[in-house]
Image 1 (cartoon, helix red, strand yellow):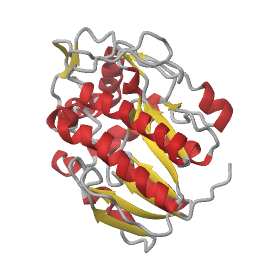
Image 2 (cartoon, helix red, strand yellow):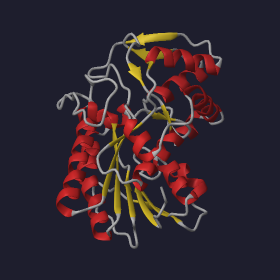
Image 3 (cartoon, rainbow, N blue to C red):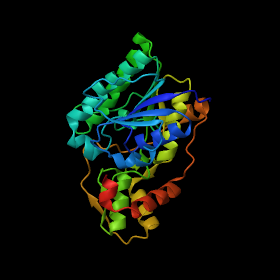
Image 4 (cartoon, rainbow, N blue to C red):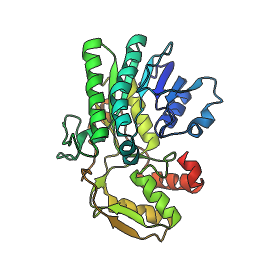
Length: 320
């Protein structure tokens, strides 16, 4: 698919997905107006991009204020706390990012006549009863549970995006992102991989919630960014799953991280977490057949790159 975007606004552009997204857009020749309120990120994440005259970094809270930008033909809405530690620490802010933030980003796309890309999440499926999860599955979500602030914020964001498409003729795309990992993660963000890698490198016990039989499907960050941009450039207007369709148990992931780090850390078990999904695996038939996208980096290689990145940085610097 031809790439035809000259200038993009990226909300949450200094975050874990946002920073490599901005870098890839620049590599493709697209100027980037990067917005972030730095609640879960830092300017260090985009430090290497700031010397590029096509890159502009603005501190801005998309959930609180509209954004004004000129000559925009792509709006990528990534802004939201996305790890359990962050969205449980900032529940109201998470809901506002999915509601007010999405509305402000859609309003910009409408004014500019730009394409709009929403980064949604596999969390819209909740604790799924369908395996693997297809895009036509409506999910099994507890709307008042501890994870609801993130799950329902993204479900609302999808509904609002669909509404703008149907009733305001905004050219929209929706991606449901599955369990991304890689360099750039904060060691204290509470995500599975950052927690396991940080613990293993420090020689601390690797902590697994419950018995570890719950599954996840890990997709390396570069593959996720490629998938997001494949959806942005494609003609699919319904939601698209982007993730690696290979289930691993959490215990298997912990053991693999321990092996790859050469750590002697014991694996210990904590109490199970309320409403934690028991299985998570995407059906990527749509992405593969309609967009020609498949993940390229296998889990072991992706983890090696991630471990090397964490090992090369002091924990305080990585926390950013």
